[in-house]
Image: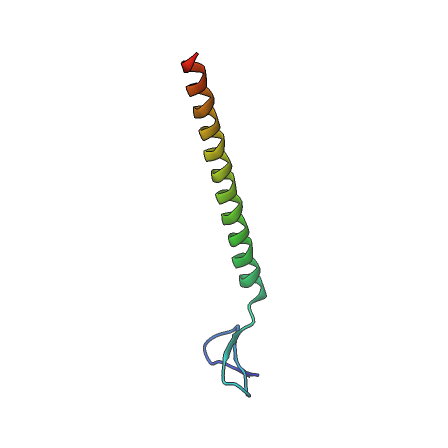
Length: 64
């Protein structure tokens, strides 16, 4: 691989000419941010489900 001038973590693949980012810390940070985003989304979905259940129970109570 050939180092790309002016970029410490970028390399050019000699066979394909593709630019490869070898910044493993940056990649780990990206994966971690995706994981956190998915956890927040799941938590929000769970809260929405709980609220819907509470609304249903309240409607049943008011009918009696």
